[in-house]
Length: 254
Image (tube, rainbow, N blue to C red; front, side, top):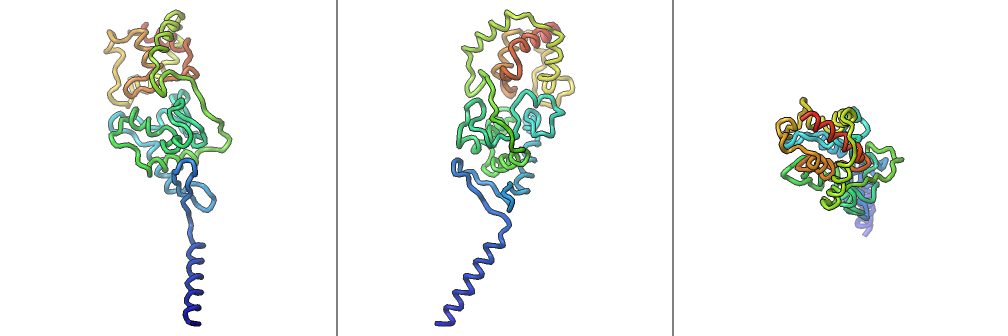
């Protein structure tokens, strides 16, 4: 009996030591069931963060676009296009993303909207895996400072394309007087990354070569609703007057 008791005692000690020796744990968000490896500080595991960084900066073979081309992580603001779209800092704390397309638990489950960008703009054939989603979430957490506020914007491009409202906007914008000079500056900032001469984005229609298809209505359509892998622009990022100015610039240079 003493031998059995001693064995049980030693086995219990070994279990205790084994538990104390773990360097990381897996935490599960009760609302999302999304798991993220964390170290002893409670921050995401470094290896998972690196995977997320690699995904964020990886160019799509189909379109040539990267997450980092449109979304700021706080280090890529040299790409002016990022000022027109939602930053990823603080994204994991948002109650909804993509103008309500993903809410509550679905925010983390969809990498804060990353799953939609992955298929719509990067045109990747294979959806993001759970591991990739967790890696992106970990990366977003790693670049967040903790003082970010909820990010909200107004758009008719998501969660569905509001074509009825688009007609109203087309009529309103057509009534405005566009400034081609200001429009040129806006075009350089918001559009030239894809539509510029030195663009690395693939399969982008040339405005110069498709003159018959370029008119005010089509320009407004693409800006407000997006098309193929062109993103939509919110009313906060480009006002109606901004769109009128861009139209003036493009139409004056057809």
